[in-house]
Image (cartoon, rainbow, N blue to C red):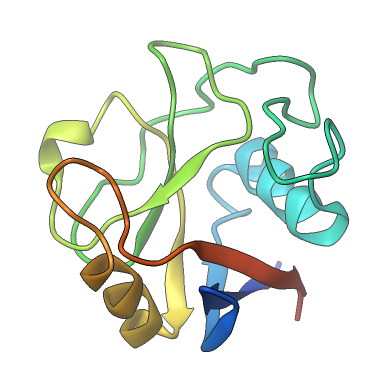
Length: 142
């Protein structure tokens, strides 16, 4: 089985930054990978404006497994509010984050475009506010 590849085209204040592609580990976490792949294909099917909070499985879904670890930059993982509360939000690690192991399901990695992820990070701040509005201008499966 070949793991799927999906992409985000990223913009900052409406100006294109570039494309980030992700390999999804469907061979290890098929349910979690399919949730993200479907989101990339169909977008925000809850509110249709990028603020949706539901997974393709309903409001929340369980932690599939914790086989994969937060080993370094480029790891794609599920955000959650505690055990078995996966929904629509994800994050991309920019450093090794082993303290997240066993708490957040790793389901992919940046395949190409880590420089774009690093550019997005530079627009951030310690208080969580960004100096430019970062948006996903397009997404899909390659």
